[in-house]
Image 1 (tube, rainbow, N blue to C red):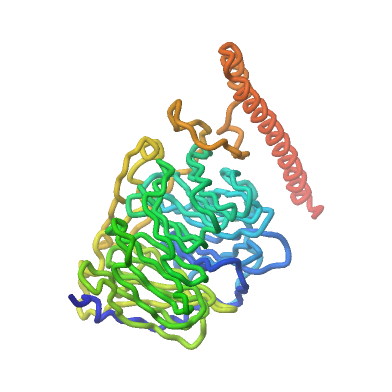
Image 2 (cartoon, one colour):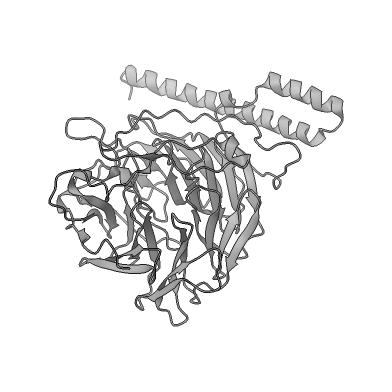
Length: 511
């Protein structure tokens, strides 16, 4: 069976939307350096002063918000900068910052169910979740919504659950995977004995019931996080020593990229029911850049970009042999330092865009458009089937209880219009039923005082547990929490006093 996308074309790079005066540098591992999500645009720039996240609301020419125009890229100094799309030229370095990590930021991920929420993982071993105001930042933001502490080494992977609200997965260089409930600031599952070496990447399946991981020990694992078990494992999926990637496809198959024993770059397709042999295996070339796969579940097209390459190859995955169909290659003159792409709901359906990439150069970032040539101006149903929307299919409580649900789909016929996002509120409580345990939590969580236990409630809880004679450990934890909250309130009071003093000086003309 042949591919139905042989006529797919690649548009030229849109030079008028190129953003310049950006700095890229080396980074541990081979992460995806650029990512888009509505309704902000962001990136990371090398600076000499601190580790900040900088944001700016995207505006169209008439001042109204534009959707799905977000770019991100990472480097070793954990500073995020933003720029207005499609503004070109030098980036203003006076944008307000979001600064909270004490070490370099290694990964960041927008929440798929709230366009204002972003999670970040850092070398300081913490995960922070931030809420960006809908109108963008006008002053620096220093307080995250919540801080999640559970890793003993740097956190290099952050990924949100695709269908359950507030479920976040993190993986660190301690070879531990932790699943969090951001809504309660709680560690749900602590998976510390499933990976013997560094985890290269993690990918949820379509409904979020499983995830697959690629590890430095050359194994690909399929893991059920709620059971804490490896469902299937393939050792030496790629025999080369360089990094590999594994992603779930919409039909449950697994697509991997890696290297052969002779250092040739490879693509492979696997059936989770039988991991003994790959369904398909292709060798590409002998370049040394790790291959980053970008998968479109609506069209079953996979785009493969290599760090240091100057090309993007794309393939269609079908149910009949040979399964992996080469479609075409986009080639440019300059190599890419990183690559990312726009979510499907951010594409221009009137131009028959099926993908929009953002290519990171040494000093600039530019878009690359993939289009399918069509003469008709009508909406192309075959190019734009219903795609995953921003609404969560279930709550965190339902997922913990064992429920599984596919993504809620939306139509792109009328183009995507972002809805008003609700604020993320943290309510510290346990979702796990009694008798169901996770690993001992080491989560020193920070949240706003209003969302945590009050001193009166803490005293009541202490009395109840003391009367039962079984709550000594819980008593100590609550006492520590009360002390932490009091210290937080005192620190915030001092900060408010300093800001009020600064404001009064400004109003009096002393500054």
